[in-house]
Image (cartoon, rainbow, N blue to C red; front, side, top):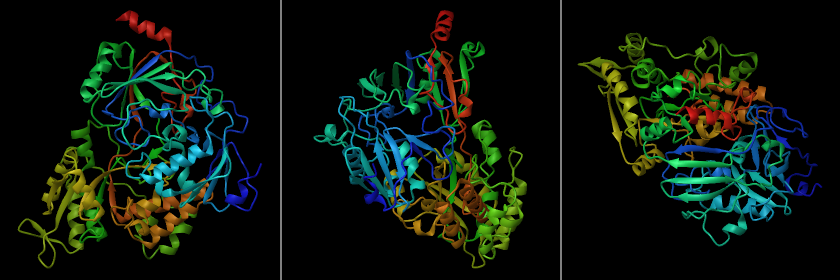
Length: 594
């Protein structure tokens, strides 16, 4: 049936079980399960995890207030493969077809897809979800993704077309990861933007059976879950019960883990984990990492507002980057747990390495006279310090660069030829930024730069951000894999966009051309070349300063679970916790020993 063809594109549509814009799919249409799971994993047992979110709603559209684990109740159209860089397989969608216009995707829903009340999932549910999302962008869980989508056109009950403002290659990630499809008939007389603790109707492998605000939410496995036999779900969703206990203090939560009240502790932060108890020495409490390479780049960035003088001078920006002693901060403040990001796309194939390749040079050559010469002659790497303090070499080089840019020291103050001092105000909305900024302020003082940290409330911070009223900020943020945010982050067309990530105000023809090349790349290799070339131009221009690299998630757990033998093959995203299972023998061993 080719019904949607006339709606999306005059050419015949080629429906497939999965989709990847950049490379061939690893798994054929008749695949039985992902390689990195155990399709014979037993079902049963309970998993108890902590949540630091004091939730007040079970609505999937509300972002910060919603209960943890709602992804167990609602499903997405697609599922991302953990062992491919940019492959997505049908979940609610049985088949997918890309329009030749590269502005539409046609979906065909699985005929067996059902809500927990037994009613079929239809195209109307998908349209309802996207319309609700568009109507309330401010509170939507995918509010940053919604600008990519234009409309949903229904063809029939099972087929629909999603039209996009942006290229499909930029839209598959939010489709797979962020947009939970909601039942239109359930929400018809309810407002999904209003907080509620009534367990909602879902379609996923679990349903909510108990909830208490500020304390816990409990999920039970749905025995007749419609998707239990799908290849993408084989070996997954093995726990009979999943419980999230709310803790308002991380220290208390870690103590609960030590006492055995929690099964797992997941951590993105950088504090030292204190689990030096006998259970760890006996191998019952295990410390490790969870592979999570679908986000790349740097976790924190020092953003300089290039629209303002003197941050519009590349020599000044480079000098400011040299004054930041990352190694000292890592040793003294973060127990050596951080890794410096030397790339905008760290820990991915998109990160520039060595000198430009032939394919990169083809993209860079037209701009040779407009970009730093070092792009062609040097591999980028931030200078390292001993980490013991002082940073004498970095500060000396910074002082020389500032002198070349026309800044001189007079009576301990760095001034321009007109006698104006170089001043920097770091805008922040959180006191936590001071931990990174205060040592940096001290280093800038050595250079004669007067700097200060201005902490304001969140409303004022967002207002000043929108008005571009700041010298510098620290931003938390990384890139997806593949990096679909390039245009919003670096293109001159996004400098004044309402949802722009281009806080540095980058506006350069070479950057624009490389972003456009990456967006239009028909293959993974061509996108890699464009991103690596872009990486070099951004780094050698010192528009902003990447700090610590994105790392795998730290994982501490009681060793009472089974894990797939080939879990390591999930090189981009390991199957946790949906690919683990409860091991009664291991659990009994630990319980008996206490």
